[in-house]
Amino acid sequence: MASPRDALIMRVGSMLRRSGDQRDEVFDVCLDDLVVLESRVPSDAPIHFDAHLESLNEGVVVSGPLTCTWVGRCRRCLGPVTGTLRPTVHEIFVRDPVEGETRPLAGDQLDLEPVVRDAVLLELPLAPLCRPDCVGLDPRWAGLDRLQLDAGND
Image 1 (tube, rainbow, N blue to C red):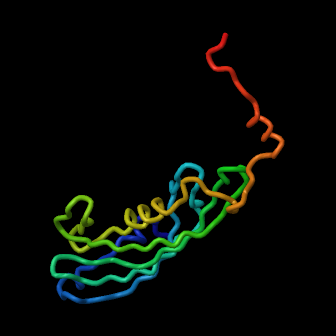
Image 2 (image 1 turned 90 degrees about the vertical axis):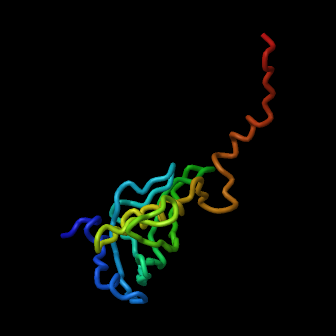
Image 3 (image 1 turned 120 degrees about the horizontal axis):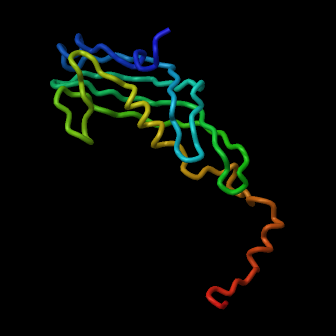
């Protein structure tokens, strides 16, 4: 079985010889270490990518939607939370990339793994909620809100 990294490396040599050439690719791949605070994509959860590739004079544009499930803990009640991410990728791969603007094209190959990883990580919720009206931990703790503390009076 091919590793996730190998599955996301695309050969685009024939596309680079014909500007305007297009093709579609579909990927289902599992990646490790997709974690942001209390949210994560399980390492056994597939990430689905409907990629559209189009060649330009100097490179290849890759675009399309990703779909994957995520899990986490509610920021208020600490209960389990699940959801679906649907980020969209739109990246340009060129031989001489400009940092922050384009991605590297190595020979006749482009590596989609960093693109997929970045898109998913940027969409993971930083502070998930199990539901918008979650009241949080046990309401009995609300009594602490009425507690007055004397700061600095020893």
